[in-house]
Amino acid sequence: MKNLLKLSALAFLFYLCFIATAFAQDASIVGKWKTIDDETNEPKSIVQIYEKNGKYFGQIKELFRKPGEDPEPVCDKCPKDDPRKDQPTKGMVIIQNLVKKDNVYSGGTILDPKKGKIYACKLWIEKGNLKVRGSIAFFYRTQTWFSVK
Image 1: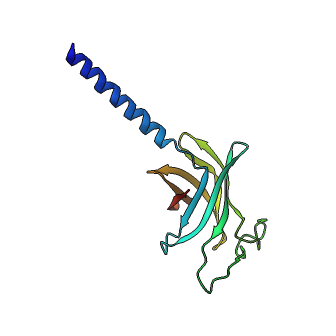
Image 2 (image 1 turned 90 degrees about the horizontal axis):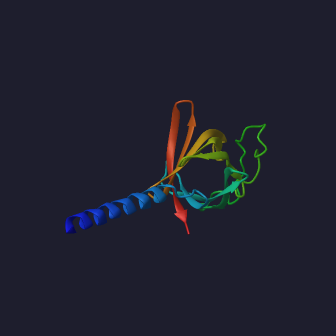
Image 3 (image 1 turned 90 degrees about the vertical axis):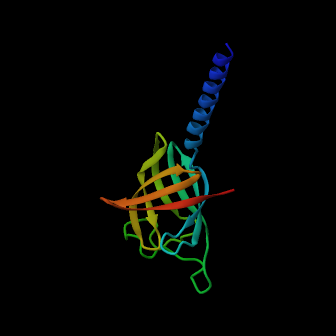
């Protein structure tokens, strides 16, 4: 009888661990994230990700600029037909129209305002950090963004 109780208690603990892990992996992307330049490994900006009408968007809220850099850059390399062309980078919505499916957000785009390139976008939470993947065809790069409290 004691062994059965111990076994039941152990099974219950495993169950609780499993549930906790499942909920932890289903963390929301909504919030503020510090972006890191994958080429220089330095902070670039703070992006606020929000949900609107069932889709997810990301807006640049803050820029980290070095001395000598333009303190108020614009997207001068954005495509001519894009409404963000020549608009200020700060305040710009760079992630658009992502849809959540399971624990991945995809189906939309992300803009690199420095290069003016638009990529297919996919986001997911991994170990508490936001993984951000931009891709064109089979080519992609993935950045890690960090939560800002």
